Image (tube, rainbow, N blue to C red; front, side):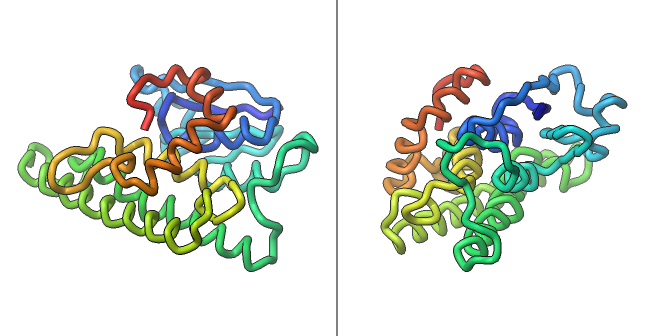
Length: 223
């Protein structure tokens, strides 16, 4: 049995959505951030980084959300009715999909983490410095959202990879959701870019996304 260690709206959201899209049976284990459960010894034994998520697949233990998503996409056992979420390995299409997944996690997500935790990059008590880091991170995220817009405009398809919905859409959905509180001159939330707004509505209409919203108890604004 697959076991996802998660917290609502954290980086576990993308693997959770991939599990639902694939129709794989799994159980959820809440890692309660409000009581620092992700820093407890038993959790650190699974993920020494003290970050969410973790996936247990039998004896296999994985951390890093993108790695979990890739493992699930390539793992046998999904119902025959579940469409593939990644192109076949060794193809040009797979290389392009991997490029976008790595970009999402290493570039867009990395800057979002700086936006949410700017105090990690300045001396303790340097509130002015943290505010400056946060503003610059938000501006960088804005420029990266524009890259997503340009890719949709380039191929004209409904999904990030073009005509085929993929786990890249699940991952990008999570990250675009994280911008929902953006305001001010640095950058607007993803939903205020018309191309991304239309794509987000397509994502919200997917049954797996509706199940995710219910499972995690997500509240408006959803994106």
